Amino acid sequence: MGGDDAPAQPVAAAALSSRTTSIDIALVGRPDELRKLLATHEHAPERIEIVAASEVVGMHDKPREALDAKPDASIAVAARLVGSGEAAALVSAGSTGALVLASATHIPRIAGVERTGLAAVYPTRQREGGSSDRFALILDVGATVRCRPRDLLFFAYMGHAYASRISKVKKPTIGLLNMGTEPTKGDDGLREAYRLLAGDPLLAFVGNVEGCDIPTGGADVIVCEGYVGNVALKMAEGVSEVFSGLGKWAFKQNLLWKAGLLLLSGGLKQLKHLTDYREYGGAPLLGLERPVIKAHGRSGAGALGNAVKVAAKAARDGVCEEIRAAIAAFEQREGDRGVASGDA
Image 1 (cartoon, rainbow, N blue to C red):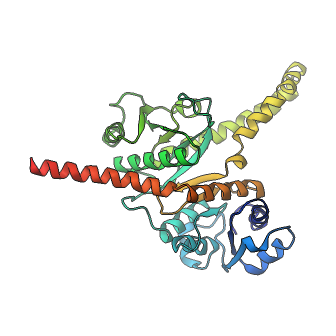
Image 2: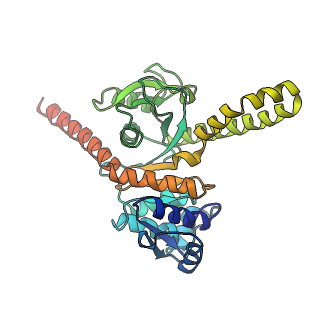
């Protein structure tokens, strides 16, 4: 029931998915409203179940207060379905805060994970290593404000699993966002995180990366604290809007510029297609036992349909299981070191 045009767009997405995929969907919300909307779309009824939830967390509600006051909110009911194993994954275009809180409350965290990571998918120029995927991953971008070194290591495991399983990058490169590339940069926490990342046998760690390395493709996965990641993400969104406005301004100013923009229109359309959030579905919330995808609030049926496909792929291809295995291996190594140190 969440999103800028909900429940119309989620219902349309479910109808489209029922006709074009083999994915079964549970639509969670007010049944009468959902059935009325569903009746206006061609769909495969056997692939869609309606699960009743009488309340809604609004986009401007304070998430914690709203969830406490509305136990039958659609996002809470949906998270409980996933937490109990009745559903394999969760997709929402509603309030990010409500999604993170409801998921953390009702879906178990992977053993060892204390802080989940919200990952943003973003386009870059062609990255080194031959990857054909033009999208990279940065996490965390807001689920966790401050992180410990171990949290940043675990974010790297999460990003590694997502990039390798969903984007099919064979050996994802990992970068640590910092104020310089030298290993000594940053505070004690960032230096310890560097040490952990550099010493991990699973990860293709490329060292510290700076803000300029985000759009230029410094790594397939960039890890950082949620505060820093959120600022970087919002700045990128703002710059995109500025360039769009400058293009419109230039079009009006000069006949030669207008002619140039018209000649570039095909390439600009391709760039818009590449950077359009509707193409890649949404942002994964990682560190939980089952996949959770946060779709953009403005998502239409096509974007939500892509988010559903990504969620189903993450469940099918074992993203969460790979994260669990990486963390278990790390803790086993730490345990072995502790035993060896005690023996010494």
